[in-house]
Length: 134
Ligand code: SF4
Image (tube, rainbow, N blue to C red; front, side, top):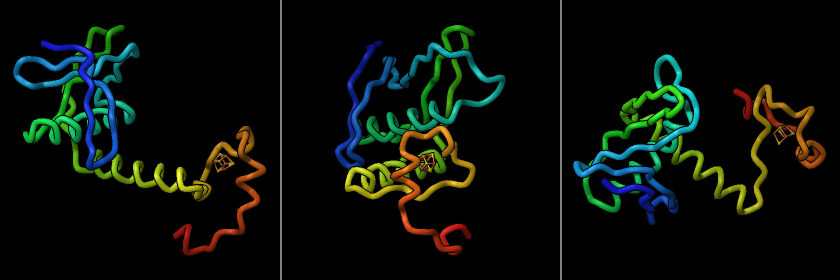
């Protein structure tokens, strides 16, 4: 067993840390939060998918998922990485690259704009087309 293992994917341009990798190659991320009654938090699904991308590139093996350990509740839960998790990571990385190039993302519906520090800058963008919403 190894702990705090750096992982990276050149293909996706991401680096990170797997909290633990066991001798059989399964990995775990460790959370200081409580577990949900069922399933896995969205952020944990994303992190699991990112680590799977990295380990697949580093080892050449398919990674089907990883464990999320919720320490306060003593729960260790396997999350099988779903295609939608992988798509969400790729879409998020694409958005981040656009933002780094200077693009401002579109205003999402029901965003918490009233308490946002970027409100003035965000509202200076020209109006949106209906086709953006539909
Ligand atoms: S004002 Fe802030 S919260 Fe609202 S869309 Fe713009 S960046 Fe998002």
